Length: 66
Image (cartoon, rainbow, N blue to C red; front, top):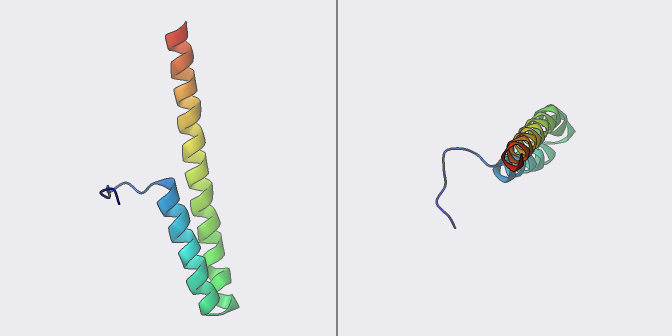
């Protein structure tokens, strides 16, 4: 297992969201419903962050090629 950094990776965020959904399910539908928006919010943020990084890297590479 590699040493953990302070910055959470996308996978960590997704895993945290999934475990949260599991605990919500264990506490019944109410818990699940309460946790779901948070999970999707975290997923959306992670995806957007990833996309912006990819777009930024693409733009940098294009400048280097030129």
